[in-house]
Amino acid sequence: MIMKKHILLTGKPGVGKTTVMRKIIPLLGADAGGFFTEEIRVMGKRMGFRVVTLDGDNGILAHVDYHSDYRVGKYYVDLDSFERIAIPTLENAMKNKSILVIDEIGKMELFSMRFRELVRSILDSEKPLISVIMEDGNVFTEGIKKRKEVTVVTVNYKNRDYLPEKVLEMVKAIKDIK
Image 1 (tube, rainbow, N blue to C red):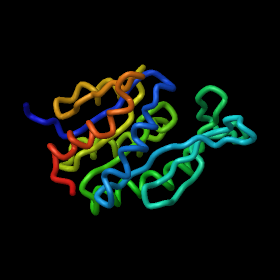
Image 2 (cartoon, rainbow, N blue to C red; image 1 turned 180 degrees about the horizontal axis):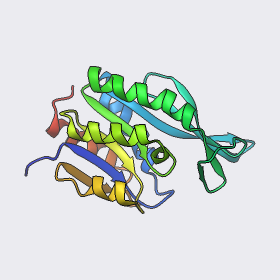
Image 3 (spheres, one colour; image 1 turned 60 degrees about the vertical axis):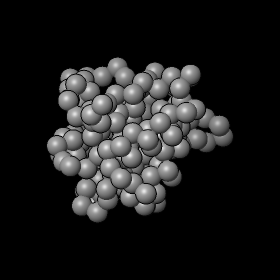
Image 4 (cartoon, helix red, strand yellow; image 1 turned 90 degrees about the vertical axis):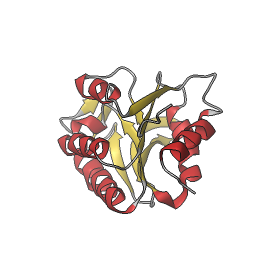
């Protein structure tokens, strides 16, 4: 079997895609660069989302108390904050890391045309990508999923516990990560 260069994790909301990704990241070690998202909670209530880079920088992705022209549900996307954090970390990872990580290629992130262009560049590069991608896509995400160098892995309740190790095996087959 010829191993495809990029691995995209998809699945229903709440199934554990980000949890799987958060378990994969430490297995990749210092060879990985990119970002993940995490919930912002206040007194147990989800108020928004934060973008966190693998090297520890972070900023707001979206929040209920922020107001902008970009909105998903009750969350307003802080495009400037997202681009200030995510774009440089991905550009740096393309130059200095052997594998890239994105959580997530989703509705909020895709308001950024700079992010879309960078995702295309990453997919066209020699660097492998592991990314979470929204299941119910749009033209952009469906186009990514159909690329010949992409493997789409659907996360579900039955496979989510063993997927981190499985994805690591796939990555090792693509590129020798120690």
